[in-house]
Amino acid sequence: QVHLVESGGGSVQPGGSLRLSCVASGSGLTSYCLGWIRQSPRQGREGVATIPTAGATTYAAYVKGRFTVSKINANNSLYLQMNALKPEDTALYYCAAARRCYDLIQGKADYWGQGTQVTVSS
Image (cartoon, helix red, strand yellow):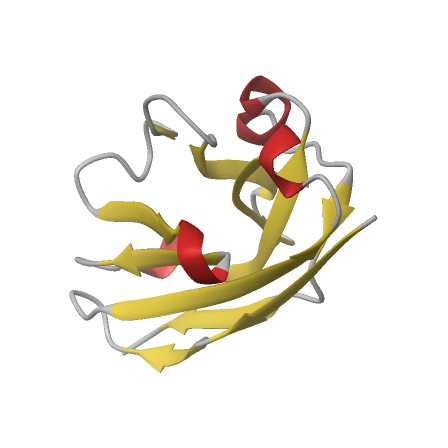
């Protein structure tokens, strides 16, 4: 069982930045790929970024070059630095875990956080 708790959402103007945080807990965490998935009425559910226990990060095309995913293994913390935000980035962002990073980038997960709202508007 994996438990995920996000924080750091909010409202920002286009071009602004936000940083999301997530604390993961539970057994077998190293068996899971961690990442971020977002959901909005307009775009539906979309994978955003993934970071495995070991290996390279992956990003969806629509955030690549603007968002950076990172984690600190010592305290099981996951982060998403979001720069150059656009109105279409407005969504509920979920910290998520899955056995395969591929599933996360497809918007599928075994475990979900409660979600944190990001709103980009002028």
